[in-house]
View 1 (cartoon, rainbow, N blue to C red):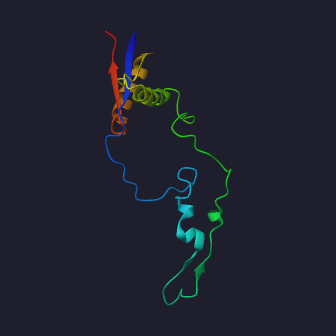
View 2 (view 1 turned 135 degrees about the horizontal axis):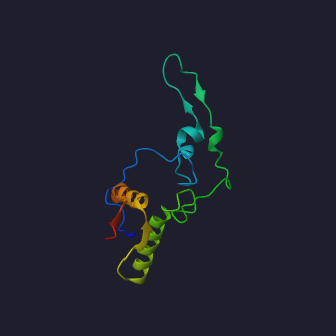
View 3 (view 1 turned 120 degrees about the horizontal axis):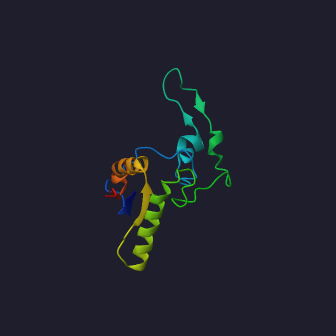
Length: 139
């Protein structure tokens, strides 16, 4: 008997506060940790014993182009196959917004108690990321 799953993406429900900088510049070009002043220009250490120590420009501050890319949320090539349903829900939300229609999300059916357990757990895990997951067991 099939279990019906419905996923609707409404956007994050909590504000994400980032206290640090991204390490890899492919995520935030020109605003990553390797673009920070200490990496680019070095740092003179203050203090009596270390007054003459200078940390020079980091080898990581070269910002070499062409070492990688981040295509964005779509596709999520490193995730599990079932997780791609969340990707589909984000795409459905974007399409509905562009068309000016209601976001109906995505619906599909799964078989077995393991699948039902997975989606019940994912419903809880993904709630704060803006995903509304409804699991309707078959009668």
